[in-house]
Structures are given as C-alpha cells and as structure tokens.
Length: 335
Ligand code: TXA
Ligand code: MG
Image (cartoon, rainbow, N blue to C red; front, top):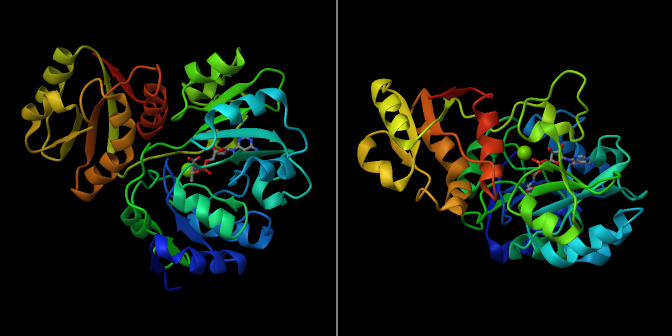
C-alpha cells in the first residue's frame, strides 16, 4: 500500500479515506493517532492489523463536540460533565458505559468505551468532516508513541493509507485516562491533565495500582493496555534513583561507548557526546514533551543502553514516570 503524505489543507481528502473505511494517521495535542471511522467495525479492525495490536486492547473514540459523546455512551454522569466542562477539548479520556453505536472492535468486548475530545485543530477538523474516530497512538505496538509525522512514517509507511503532517505534538505523552464507570473514579493512565487537577474538580479519584507497579497476577487489568509491554526503544533503559551528584558519578563510572544519558540541560556539558536532554531540570512539561522523541533518537543513533533519572510521581512527572518505568521494564537502580 502506498502511504500518502498529507498536510492540513488535505482534510477533505483525509475525510474521504476515513469514509471509505481507510486509515489516516493524525496529529493530536498529545501524540499522533492512527484513525479510522469509529462506527465502522471493519475499518477499526484494520487498525489492529497495521499496528500489530492485540485485539483485546480497546481503542479511544475521538469526538469534536460534546453532543457526539452523548450518543456514544449510555450514561453521562455529573462528574463526567464537570470534567468535560473543565478539560475538554484537551488531553483527557473518560471511560463510560457504552451505547449500542459502539462496535465490538472498538471496545474489545467491554461494556464501556473510552472517549476523548482532542484540542488539536487538524484532529477536530477531520472528525467534523467525517465521523468520530477510533485512534490509538500511531506506533507499532510496543514501541514509543510518535510525536512527529516522521516517527509515524518510520513505523507505518506502507501499512496505512495516509499521514497528515501537523508538526510536533505539544504534550508529548498520551492523554490521561480516567474511568467513571465505577463506584469511585479511578485514574488508569496519567497524562497531561494531572491527578491533582482531576481531584480539584470532582473530589476523590483513586489511582489504579498498575500506574506505578507492574500488573501482578490476579490484579484486575482495568485497562487492558496495562497488560502489554509498552513504549520500549530497542536500547535497554535503566532508571537511576538518587541525588544529582550520585547520578553523575554512577553514569561516569558506567559510561560505555554505546550508552546514552537522558539528562537535563544543566547536565548536558557532562555528556557532550552521548547526552540527550529532556529540557531544564524543573521544566516538567518539557520532560513529557521530549520523552518519546528522545527514546527514538537514542535508537536512531545506535545506542544500546540508556541511563535516565527516575522522575518524581507528582503533577505531569507522574505521566513521565509511568511511561519511562515501562520503557525500563521496571528496572530501577537505587543509588
Ligand atoms: O493521547 C491519547 O490518548 C492518544 C491519542 C492518539 O489520542 N491515544 C492513545 O491510544 O494513547 P492508545 O490506544 O495507545 O491507548 C488507549 C488506552 C489503552 O491503555 C487502553 O487499554 C485504554 O486506553 N482503554 C481504551 N478503552 C478502554 C476502556 N473501555 N476501558 C479501560 N481502558 C480503556
Ligand atoms: Mg499506545
């Protein structure tokens, strides 16, 4: 299959592809998504094939106005409305009981559906010109999510109908996922909308244990995506937990030829050859923004091992921690 490279002036062409049951990779404010008509089960099935994604891992449905969401769910509780008013459009996904319109391919047989209203103008324009879009991140299953059209091209060229180039994604990690289909709202995946922001608006929000730990045998995979290996570059990632002094001294004494260091701007001078910076030490939004692109860069430059700081678990750093922990297969060295 030839993959067309489109721009924001090709929304009509992209909408045609979607209406004909094809696949189009689209920019969003979080990461690039691989989109199909969410109401067409056959089209949605192609997404799983193109990504090599397990069929039991459900997809997020992207909408371009709240009225659309009302038709896709069977219950829209008050807390969901409050979150929608405060954080939509934006990087927040809500899991709610699904309506009959949702094909089984989207929800992987669950009774719920994940809904998100993205803020990116290209994503919104395409949804308005076609239909609600089912879209996972547009990477091959298991690898880091794409934050540029080039990343998508590297993974998906020849496997999908088109890619719309919308430049670099703003947030850089996937949306926050919260379920409101349970007694107490529960955070399933941290992202650009923080736990603190959610609690401020709706009160108690639990954190699913798999956000910070490997899913243990017998633990309920509230979000099927929790079961799978995620975000891994080819290089081995190792997290180091300790002070900056301990970090620098450990890395210097273990510095191999093909070892990269995910560092901060303030440390870049120590790693002239192999440092890849996430931004200023306390510029947490930048850490999120650059995380996946840095992991991909390490692979591109042929590094075999990546040392990284162990992030804190607060604010947007919780999202960075959750992703890098998985990229590191939960390996942390306490310094
Ligand atoms: O920012 C994002 O959310 C991006 C962009 C493209 O919008 N999309 C994205 O999709 O990250 P994906 O498929 O890579 O991640 C969706 C996550 C998975 O962990 C999946 O298991 C979970 O959401 N999920 C989807 N539907 C669910 C449901 N009904 N119940 C629980 N978890 C669900
Ligand atoms: Mg993904």
